[in-house]
Amino acid sequence: MRQRKRKVGATYHDAGVDLEAADRVVEIISKQARATFRSEVLGDIGFFGGLFQLGKYQKPVLVSSTDGVGTKLKVACALGKHDTIGIDLVNHCVNDIFTCGAEPLFFLDYIAMSKLRLETLDSMVTGMADACKQTGCALIGGETAEMPGLYPEGEYDLVGFIVGVVERDAIIDGKAITAGDALIGLPSSGLHTNGYSLVRKVFNIDKDPSCLDRHYSELGRTLGEALLEPHRCYYSMIKPLLSKIKGMAHITGGGLPGNVPRILPPGLAARFEAASWTVPPIFTLIQEQGNIDKGEMYRVFNMGIGMVLACSPGDVEELTKAIDGAWVIGKVVQQKGKETVAINDLST
Image (cartoon, rainbow, N blue to C red):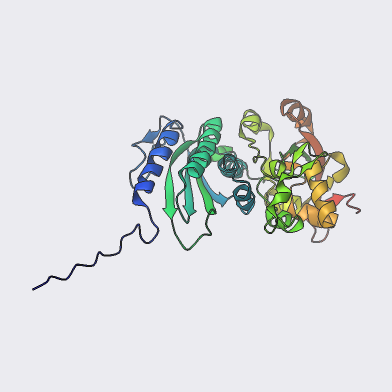
């Protein structure tokens, strides 16, 4: 009697998931992550959870945040350049928790793509590890997921999770801000990680990514290079001066109007003088290309200001001398009506 040939069952690899590639990813990430470890890190990459021991603090308050890079990822994928995206992610998260004076302790990432691409992952993780080293933050773990059918081929998602710590009596929450305080602006390095959905529409990047290779004399480089400029980190330059600062606003999505009110006590507003700083040419190019109203530009982009510090008038000179590129761009005033942020000289 002839035996029927047994049909080979389906495998995970047939479904589009490569377990061997996943193991190689762990090797890549582990090497980069270990180089960022602090003495408080316990264990190693590969356990089910990252272990971190708090030690030297008296009344520690943990500060956490999570964020992504947004559709800046689309620009990176269009150019096949992924070495700066990891820097963006870490610096954005560090800036967020630093607004209350927190020291970054450890960072975790989540990377998901339809098919694991080792070179892409290596570039991203290298960027994350380098950014973590700059602030003494440990890249303690994360998750890398291969999910065929969920993400378009060649694209991915990237999310970061950060935990920091600040002594309870050293928290900077803006409660000490009063009318008459100065508002100091720190320069951004470009768009940072916000406004890319509008940029992609203005330049029609999704349909014709070749525009990213166009060189603009006012930028001194290509559009793609300008758009992928990494998100600036303000931690190291501000940390020694925290005692002089009453409040910090990280200027991300929503621009000055959407972020500065988050640190103002009730009854106060911020008045900025748009003419007090020079808007970088990348923003002018976007505005002209898209025929965008200036008010809309300030609601979407940082317009050259990546962080705003609130301080007493008597501390302005010390702060502006100590922080490269810092200058007074406005002041805190009594609120009149519902408006909490006014930006003078926004004529189109």
